Figure 1 (cartoon, one colour):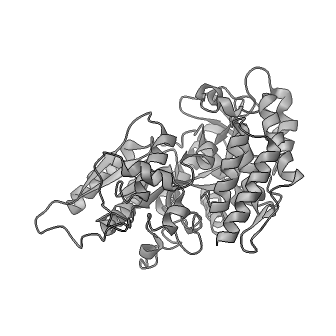
Figure 2 (cartoon, rainbow, N blue to C red):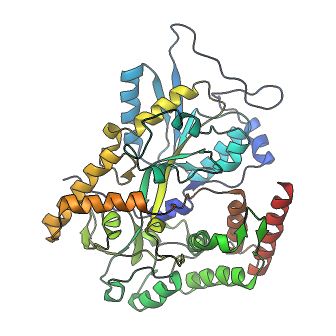
Figure 3 (cartoon, one colour):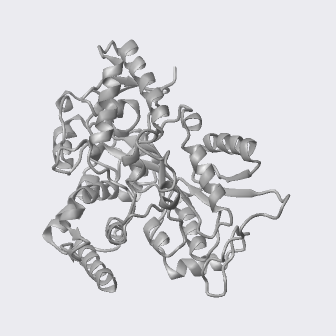
Length: 453
């Protein structure tokens, strides 16, 4: 039976993913000295050169996709199908267990120099900055011309969640639905909805024995909490900010204290994946997460796992909003300097098709037909294995109604102001600056950004 598998680092991927820092001129200089062959050149002004209209007659066309450390079989399968359908060869660049952070920095540097692969998948780049500098394509130009790109075919509020001022520089081909998975039963959390992070730690701390309580770092939890309350700190439209305040300093220090108390993972141990595996509580996604949107929970038995008890994910968002649980995931984007942008978009369309998305991956597909099949599978599992009394068609209708009526989904993209806050917070959790200095630097840099706009 096809099953959603447990994702140990679901939310971790959302918050830090295969991510990179802000785009810089130094990064461009770094890429300019790279000896690796490039799929695109730049003109004398440094701007990406105009792409060729088409390959010479009879010339074989190839495109290159640089893939983060995940789902190689999924992409290789799609590449094979695409070549069968179009005759275009898709070269997948993939290195198992590579450093995603270093790779993302290198990719951004290459993009700034007008180089790089035709397409990137799984890397959480600084898409807004790269897009505004004409280094990534606005994918909305293709979506707006495709009448089939609608709510009947895709979960559009997920697809369009990363849109920034009407432009879509990166598109999620999957999404996740956050839930909390515990390795031990915790009656104190049964039926608890919309707990804040502070309430969660206060409620759950008594179950801590040995090891860390929750499998996220203090820095990741800060990012989660800041995203939930960003509007109270930064108003980009009014160009106002309240970052250098006691509230921000308390937010920074409280998360760090949780790490020091063993309630979450300290930043300096954030790369110790054994700590995530051994945590009592971890972030989960998949079928159990989807059913939790309807307040349906059960002891989910995952392949290769012991029983996992599913509870509601903590959040500092004070509004009771199921959209807070949904996060777009595994973004794809197109290099503006690619010579074959239209062909790359056709490959993305194949990745979004029911045939390719309905392959039993751990992620939730944005294609509605593929999603319906996965929900059917999860409902059968829940009813047969755990004797839940559910009306499958009615439950499925409620799930899709929830997707269609929920509010705006958090995009997960790094806006310029968010990039500033995240980077200064990282310096604090790395022990480079005090909380007071971090808050001051956030405010100063955001003010400077506002003045430059």
